[in-house]
Amino acid sequence: MPSGNQLRPLFVQVHPQDTVAIIVNEGGLPAGTEFDSGLKLIEDIPEAHKVALVDMPAGAPILRYGSVIGYTERPIARGSWVHEERMRLPVAPSLENLPCATAVPAPMPPLEGYTFEGFLNDDGSVGTKNILGITTTVQCVAATVDFAVKRIKAEILPRYPNIDDVIALTHNYGCGVAIDAPGAEIPIRTLRNLSLNPNLGGAPMVVSLGCEKLQPVRLLPSSTLPILGTGAYIVRMQDEQHHSFGDMVAAIMELAEKRLTELNRRTRVTRPASDLVVGLQCGGSDAFSGVTANPAVGYASDLLVRAGATVMFSEVTEVRDAIHLLTARAENEQVARDLIREMAWYDTYLERGGVDRSANPTPGNKKGGLTNIVEKALGSTAKAGTSAIAGVFGPGERVTKKGLIFAATPASDFICGTLQLAASMNMHVFTTGRGTPYGLAMCPVIKVASRSTLAQRWSDLIDLDAGSIATGDATIEQVGTHLFQMILDVASGRRQTWADHWGLHNDLALFNPAPVT
Image (tube, rainbow, N blue to C red; front, side, top):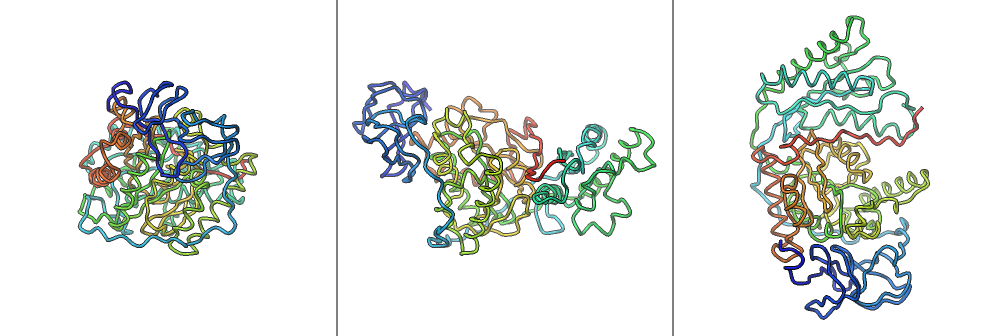
């Protein structure tokens, strides 16, 4: 993409009724700049920030995406910079009397014949990686497991060529917590379902201290309970036969080798695209996210749904202000009610903490032109494409339906990613405008840039450039189709993401709304 000085002045107006648009040119534009439309800037406006397209009196609604994102605090002249200090946040949409399944999209023609090469599991799920995951029941054992994993990768893993990685599923939960309190079921079922992630091949392995509140019986799936007495999947550090740290590490390594032997028998086989479970997320968003990267992801999402796959969008606070648009798209009234249930639960959760959804935008979001959570939410939901919403699942629940799914999570990148992994995600698509080296060990993460300047500057971190949509050099359909094919290639192991290339893998982060004792 040419620099701001080389590119003719450009802005992006999303909807014909919008009263603001965002500046496309790198570095922004100075006062006096005139666009082809005749609009003239009366002050300097940074890149990705909003320009007033019309004169607006005090108290006037400010429209972007065809929706009200705020109200003017004082009169704003055409050609002015519209920023946070000049606008007031609207009230969140009421959860009463929302439209429920009133505008259900008609099913789109199915896409047939699309496949990828994946690892078939006994439960019918399919992995895009072949990984041994070692789950911990409590933070006390995390350092020991990390130590053991380093030795396993160095001394044992080279003998098992069909296995991609050995990872420790460590966390800060397990003891010093109110284990039976309301809300405690969320971190517990998250950990249980993480061990069932398709990329771990149905080979759960647990390391326990022994005295912690989160006993393995709570953590392992019910199908393994009959063999708990044999210790087949469990190493307990406080067991009497472990006389030293060396004994503990040796026990972990011995069990790991047994599981590696089982996993190494797995090979990639051709599977339909319907076996994909793709999680969508955005982080380090900017004002371009909602007009380039997220709509392109939304187009790919529709293609995946047409191919029979499961596609999850999440981040409650980043859909809350668009909930009236989403409940109308619900497949039926029950799905709409389930959406409302998750919004209401989170409203209450935030209220207990003395905040509301306005706490979401970061300094980087605002520097990138996102004035408030309303604007951010309207752009964020573009990732969900145009398909009907087929189901809603709570935090940490395993998704068991095909189609477009709302999997409720906080907007925190790391917590959202962890919960989507627990929901059975085997592919991840992450959009960013400001940039992030985010990645997950358990699942490939395709990062999509909203701006070409970011994609060029971070060419060894960004997997796909959607910024060409803003300049008119590519269409949403073209970038979305490219992403769809990239998902199939990465899922098949034919292409590696930059995060996996560099081994950039963030820690798991549990969502625990329950008390800590």
